[in-house]
Each structure stands twice: as structure tokens, then as C-alpha cells.
Amino acid sequence: QVQLVESGGGLVQPGGSLTLSCAASGPIFSIDIMGWYRQAPEKARELVANLDVSMRHGDTTTYAEFVKGRFTILRGNARNTVSLQMNALKPEDTAVYYCKMRLYTRPFDTPSDYWGLGTQVTVSS
Image 1 (cartoon, rainbow, N blue to C red):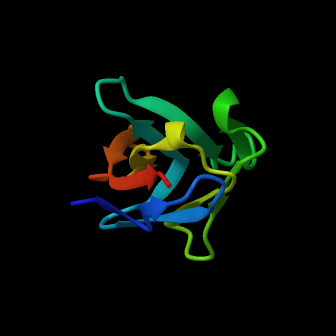
Image 2: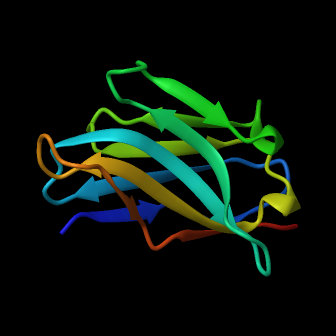
């Protein structure tokens, strides 16, 4: 079974920084997209950043407008890992952050989306 595990969440003061990490394990043949989403209380889950690592497009990043210039998504040296570097954090960034990957478990198969269980980020003084 493919599993995604996030780490690095916590409590940080406004203006501070935090780095989240996500590692995927299990029968992974290849990964197309690695992304981070977040969900604040009583709000819908929303995209934070995506990294398209499929060979079709090269490495292409997409960021939500509300994090542009503050957050950076990076693929790790271990190819099944992805991080989210978060700077200049604001109280409105408080949410549970989820890692998502679209990947193939076998060649010539249809890719599927896998989610981690999430990690809490709280920005507060």
C-alpha cells in the first residue's frame, strides 16, 4: 500500500518560518504530481502548491495566489519526497496541511491520487 506521511508542522509566530516534509512509501513506479493542500476549520480544502514532475512538462510549479512569494515547494533528493518551505507566515495560514501525490504503482497503469493524514500548522503569537 502506498502511504504518504507528513512532518514538520507546529506552532510558529507570525512572520516566522516552517518547513513541511512529505515522504511516500510503498509500491511506487513513478510520480506525476506532488502537491500541498490545506484546510482551515470550517473551510474547504484548498490547493497551496503543486509540483508537476512528469516528464511531459519538466518540473513545473503552481502556487495559490495567497502564498506566492512566501512558500516554496521542492522535490527532495529522495525522489519520493517533497517539502514546503513556508516563510512570512500569517495567522490566516493556520490550517491542517496535507500532502498529495498523483502516482503510478505499475507501468502502463492509470495514475491515482494518494493523500497523507495531514500536519497541523498554527500561526499565533
